[in-house]
Length: 543
Ligand SMILES: Cc1ncc(COP(=O)(O)O)c(C=O)c1O
Image 1 (tube, rainbow, N blue to C red):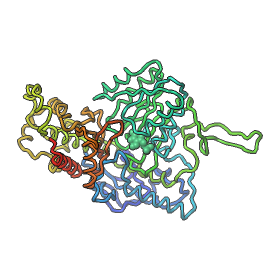
Image 2 (image 1 turned 45 degrees about the vertical axis):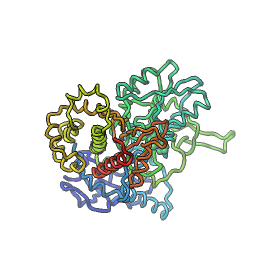
Image 3 (image 1 turned 180 degrees about the vertical axis):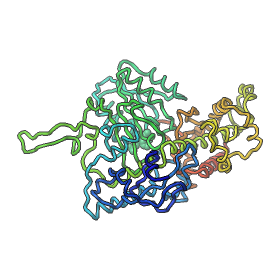
Image 4 (image 1 turned 30 degrees about the horizontal axis):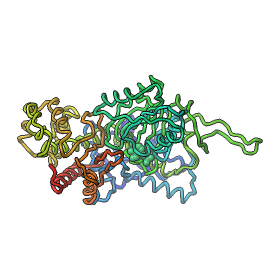
């Protein structure tokens, strides 16, 4: 494929801001050219570096974007991540691992700033890139250092008075709720904590039921950090709008994990992150305020980029207008090199293909889910065994788990890649030929029944909904325990002692283990996770 075709087909940004350390171009691509004719596509990159040529002659490897989670070649992609091989990192929900092109870009930009005394000037290119990927206008994006900053900006942009009600959840990160808690203390607004349902429909219904005439704000995460459940944000924002409720969404997780269009979501404010799923440098985030809400939004801090002019020589000293864009919420000098790294991360994401990334990360987390269900089914103390009432229905269900192949078909449809993939997955599949034979007759409905039945046993409860529209790349589960520290916490410590990093969610008594799988994770890492969990069960004499 010619590079121009590659661009025309929109398969990704081909001009990187860095060299890749190894030539991992896949067949079917023109890997000889570091072509200048495409440079215009990348004109916005690294403008803060002035006219530097340092990063113009490089490109990302190219991939064919397929529905197949095996393509791009994720093993090659993995080689761009220099994570210590002794570490198994299943905690991307806390921070993303920066790939080599991003590290290179950061390094080059810091070097350049130091050697050329290059001061960063805001050129709006990072905002443009975020707008392009999320469907926003670039004038609706401000660059922040993290999600907490965005949540604060939204919280203090609103005109609220004592007694006004804010709908929020128990599943907030401290950065998502502390601004609202603080506002409750200072201004007497009331936080109404709404339970998440076990699927999108019940979650939606819970919010609708909690609203009163005093409800003024919907302040919820798109994907909470606790159990990774994808909330029905589009439906909730439409409902909120119809009632004059302002929506302020904590979007720490979706960008880089699942595809979305912010205009389709229909929210007023959205606080995003670039150092989690986008795999950008730590300390980079973004904030969206729609054009309509911006006109009604307050701003408490102003600096360079917030106002169009100021004059301290007049009497009295004077200030011009607030700039008519969300960028007014970006204050003063920023780290140009971090912005350069963030742009590279976003281009790398575009290059791999948001759809391929989403398929891959959902696939990996579906495999985690599958194995937890399988573990539950095989737990001696499973509810099915201990509750004789369920025995009659169990006749209709397979005696053993559906095969991984059927499971994948259930989630991803009849994809051509599935059979070839099973071989690769064998390391973690049951290896039970009887199961595979039986599974061929298992219908989707039966798989669903099977999954719902084994979501909870007396030893392990999967908290992330089974419903696929509510599930992304993070699975939360709790190991039943009345001890302190809980067994979920103990398991995270146990895994850590083996070099595996998971996230223990202890906040708000949620008490669960969160497993986050990004595209760079591999099946053998999931295999290892399951093996650690089984060993832990044995050690604790569970199941
Ligand atoms: C859902 C959610 N909101 C907010 C935050 C806070 O992010 P930051 O520390 O980048 O501000 C996090 C961090 O993990 C999060 O997961």
